[in-house]
Image (cartoon, rainbow, N blue to C red; front, side):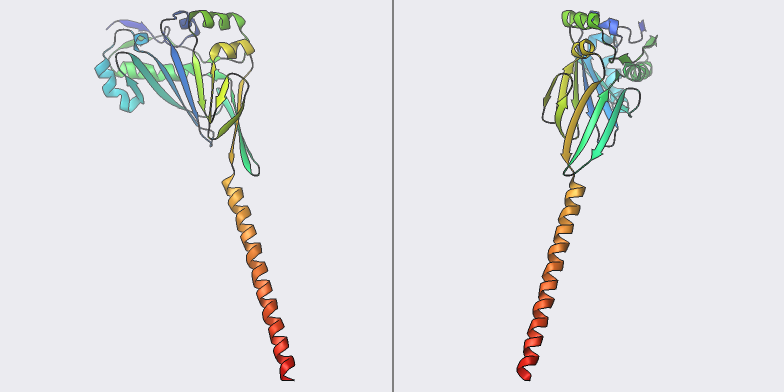
Length: 232
């Protein structure tokens, strides 16, 4: 097997110079703060590999592969890559996601494990891609050689995004936009606070029932008084 420079052409920012090989990120954000990040790319980025052997391993490594495309997913928790905040208000819960870095190191490590299990030789390593530092040169290079998309799926309707566009419960931007702006990418969304709504409805129902029983008791008492007066 040939020795492949581990992800050096796959996930490093310098790899972006190879415009023919494109990447897409899909970030599925959970309301509990956890997330699943999937990277999708051309299979050519892996070099000469045994597709069938890798495909057989994919159920174990949460990946998919064919002759045209390859994708692999990794589970994440909030921390150095992103921050996630929840504000439980009424009638909405507001979620705020701050993306600080692309966890290429996590995805690279997982892909390395997959390739090793498939009998491929890998070496080298990568670091996470910090997107908070403004880098207009890198942004220009991305626009010229082939940009990379990042799509976020939030647990509710997206109300605001500092970069890119929003549509329903998703927000999407290009990495060139993030590098051109600098600072974390901030995405906000909201969803109905069903727990508060149910609690409010329960309180209203209890008030109505209490008022009903009070009026019933009052009416019964008035009838009893009138009955006693007639007997006299």
